[in-house]
Image 1 (tube, rainbow, N blue to C red):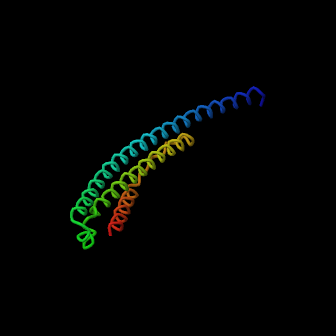
Image 2 (image 1 turned 45 degrees about the horizontal axis):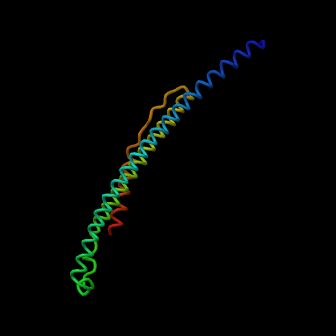
Image 3 (image 1 turned 90 degrees about the vertical axis):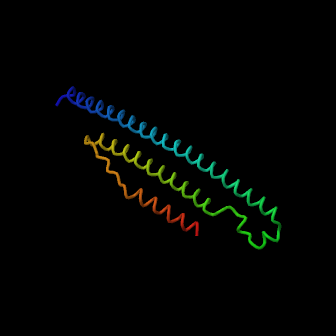
Amino acid sequence: MDIGTVVEEVKGKVETLTAQGQKLAQISFDTLKQANGIVVEKFQTLVKTETEAAKDLYAATKLGLDKALADGIKAVASAPTSYLPPSDKFVAVFNDTLTVLSDAGEALYQTFKSGFDSIQGELTGKPVANKRKAPAKRRTRTAARKSAKTAAA
């Protein structure tokens, strides 16, 4: 084996590794770009949901306070909980928040899993099928509902 052959083999391997590195960098960048889009979208949804809920809760609280001021201390002392905002509003806000966060987590998981599978497929030379686990999402939503019921009680 002469030096020229060794140099050509090394050069061929380096070119292959460089091309793979560029593909991996592109896949990683695309995955992060998708994840950023998911985070921004879900954050905007969360801000919108929480802002609307805060307005509703403020209105209900103000209504209860105005009613308490009009009824007097004696009426408030006899039934203080009737002047509070309904607890179902708090539970609804909690459920909405959990739904948005669990959907965001699921979407981010799927995005990163897909990116990882693409990178793994690029390195091994075999495309890896993305196997989605639907029951995990159902378990997350079920857990969110159970914790919301517990919070309501």
